[in-house]
Image (cartoon, rainbow, N blue to C red; front, side, top):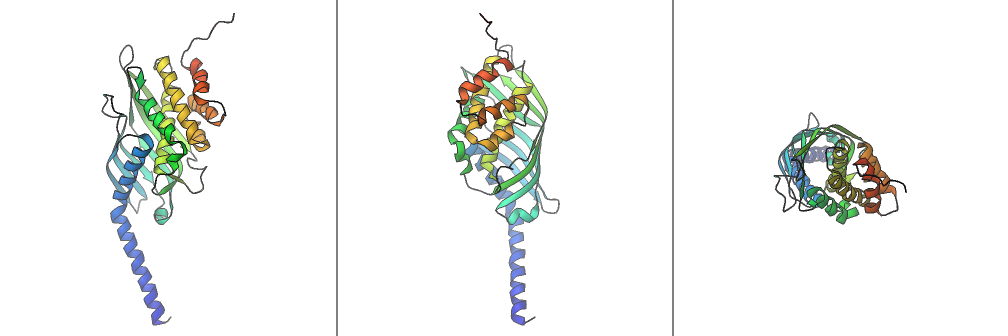
Length: 278
């Protein structure tokens, strides 16, 4: 091999080594900024992450203390909070346009549902997602190709309802083929916009009999409309979250008005009394 070729190969090796070192030193801050910006864009409220740590050898990204704020005017300290969650990544794809993620595990997610003066914080987030629609796909950043998401030990506390706070427990939600509808993956903002209806579908499914019917109907109407606005991929994903999620999916596939249809579909699920036949 000629000396010139050797120098070229050596130069390429140096460039690769530098790139790996730079990636290792900056990936944490890049991922942190991406999650915060994606959450703020998709949900319309500030999203904060304490720290992000990548282990290249283990192929794991650990996100610590993520807090998604409540909309203005509500008193709960946050809308959503998770102490930490882990993301399995294929490290060879960190240089690619789309990062491949075999599994995201989120354990111990906490949600505050708050009703105040005839409104609720969930519907306000859903309205923001609906206002974006397919625009949730346009926010910048790296794309993700995700196989599975496992949500365990989700706790929702419902306040502003008669009889005091109600607590809803969702032991497990498993989502498969999360980004299967997109060969190029999806952006963090679109992922967060999709996950919010999934979480709410799971809570509403387990909250039948606990969440007052009028509040449940209001949230399902608005979250269902948001799901429909995000397109078929979001509808298929939320369909994996139980009976309520399946109803969201049907509404997302329907050409009829989502608000009218969902309100009618969920009347029975949440205890709305049927009219007696005349």
